[in-house]
Amino acid sequence: MAGTANKKQSRIQTENRSLILTAALNVFSTDGYRGATLERIAERAGMSKTNVLYYFPSKEEIYHTALEQTVEGWLEPFSEISAQGDPVEELRRYISLKLQMSAEQPEASRLFANEVQRGAPLMLDFLKTRLKSLVDEKAAVIREWIDQGKLAPVDPYHLIFMIWATTQHYADFDTQIVAILGDQSKQKGFQEQTAHAVLSIILNGIRPR
Image (cartoon, rainbow, N blue to C red; front, side):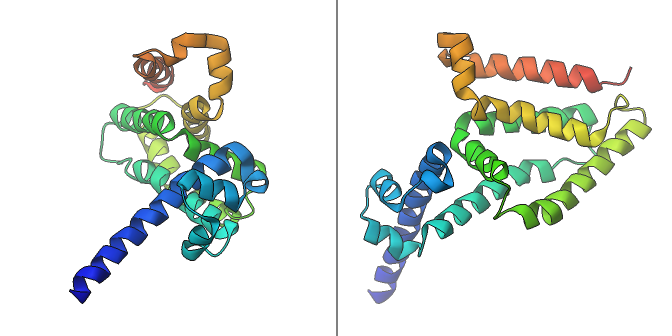
């Protein structure tokens, strides 16, 4: 019975931590780090502030954990770009996944954007080390494809930056998109239209001439 109780408590703790992080993601992405409060996060999670502090000792710890989870999730599809695959298909898959993530997790994209805009105080070392190393690795893969004549001669780093900027634009600047396109941006099929347009523009630009 004791083992069963421990397992149940562990599951409840996991679920509550997830609820808090989901609520925090929403609050941080809209209010920013400075504007977010533990009270707002607790209210969004449907818990008391005391209960939130039981799982996380501070607002900074919640923010740091949410940010870590966001970055880990985004790096996974990027790290899976394979040098052995067809270049256009590898990049098509990656761009499609990034667009899907922006559509399904816009708060995560805004959270990361807010962190970078405030100078990345919690992420700067990560950006300069792990992220830079991974980008260097994938830029080398793209450069090799170019040298083999499989892609048009474009700068690998700026291609990566362009993919990031374009795909995350639909999350970070959703208000602007809605203001310009109105109801069109909320209609069924808009995400598919977006993916088709973005993929056509980027992939046609990098296909070998």
